[in-house]
Amino acid sequence: MSDDFKITNTMCPTEVQGKAADGCPVDLRFRWGLVVVRLSGQVVLGARVSDNTDGLMEPGAALRLARAVATLHTAPAANRAAAAKELDLALAAVRSPLLGCAAVDPDIHAKLFPGRGNA
Image (tube, rainbow, N blue to C red; front, side, top):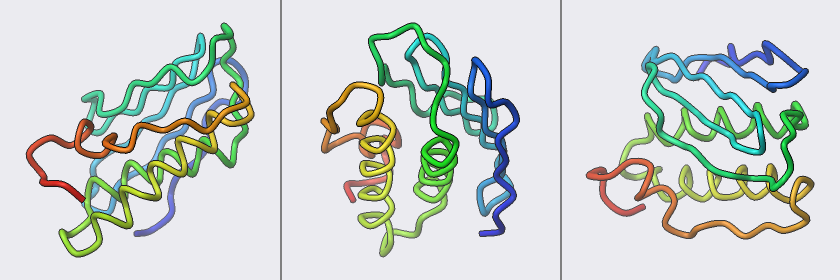
């Protein structure tokens, strides 16, 4: 995948834009403690990652999460488990500094991409 992911706003809200390997636009926005990732304008991830009303996310964590969603979106069946695990880890990396915990839903990939089978 070419890496054209960019932080487009480092202030509130934190925003990332890029493209998945299939050209699908990926947008991440973090504000009021809620991170939302869209693929082609459709929300595929919405998670409260902080109880605070913040919108500042560490840029590396924001990029990693956007890339992980894009990778899972285009992952072939043979790579889906690894892509889902990276998404779980990326979400934990976002949550850890914000909440002081790394609790991640182990079935998040199935909830984000229903009908694509279990990883």
